[in-house]
Length: 216
Image (tube, rainbow, N blue to C red; front, side, top):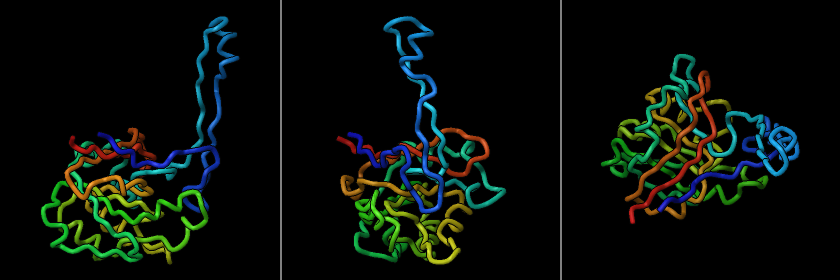
């Protein structure tokens, strides 16, 4: 069974304050297609202008570091069908993780459930969001995890310009998936996580279709 963990992207929606909103339109309409292909033969070709940080998206090292790899070099084994755990931190604004809690997570995706995603589409989504501490990021690196995801506005605190969690994880080639949703539908473990972006040269972040696969 597949459990969708991605937000729907709509025209003009805001993912993060201050970033451009997506413009979703039509390049070839069905009416115009009939003029090309004949009566009753219709195709629609869409056209999208989109910021790479839109909806549910993944960060790879180039997002933070000029010499880090871009999306074209993302190892699929880090983000496709990866054994995963979902750690409940609902109601915890500043999230710590311990070595004991992450024991056995080497090569796994670690998803942090906060339920902040329930405020998606409201002003409350941009206020007082939960985030990981720098110590939690170090614990994830030490545990050798494959990737990390969170259902919040940002995996870092957005008070000030420091982004220690991004800096720590991306320095060690650990991708970050932000703005997940529906994590409440996942079990604590025994599932696989997938969040694969297109291979875009020169991009360090992009929208993904994230989902969990639960063994039947």
